[in-house]
Amino acid sequence: MSAKKTYRAYWYKSEIQWEASRRGKLCSAGKPELEISSPPEFKGEAGIWTPEDLFVASVNACTMMTFLAYAHHKNLALMGYESEAEGLLEYVDGKYRFTKVVLRPHIEVESEDAVQQARQILEDAHKGCFVTNSTTAQVELFPLIRISPAQSGQSAMP
Image (cartoon, rainbow, N blue to C red):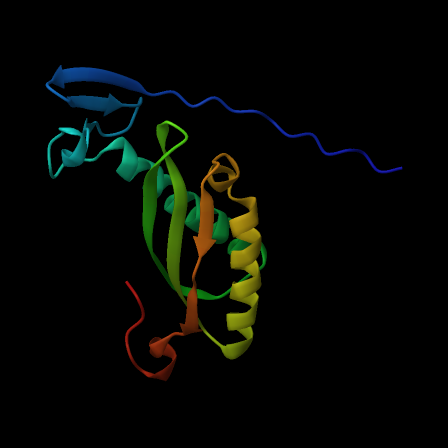
């Protein structure tokens, strides 16, 4: 009989302070402050991070971080990772909610064998991303995985 693995639980803390109008400051110990606002379409200020931006960014960031952890565990020779994300906020059943988040990761690897390995790792990371698993929005993944041009003498992704 094998022992059942136990998992720890974690708390994360942030603070927010209203500054003026629909603008505030987001803080978390040991991290830079972040100016936040409602988006312009909800009478906020342009050019400032919004909860909507942060939501979409958190799905994108969690997917990448989960991929990186899985890739490291599987010894994937990763040359680059960039990803675009967009989320659809819709009025459904009397309230606004994100109904869809689309991720477009661009991944560069060393070889053709690594392309297939990266594709599987990305699928597993997508399923394992705790932010994706914490939302009711449909999260779609449209990856582009290719062999790095650096392997043919060109520069790799930054």
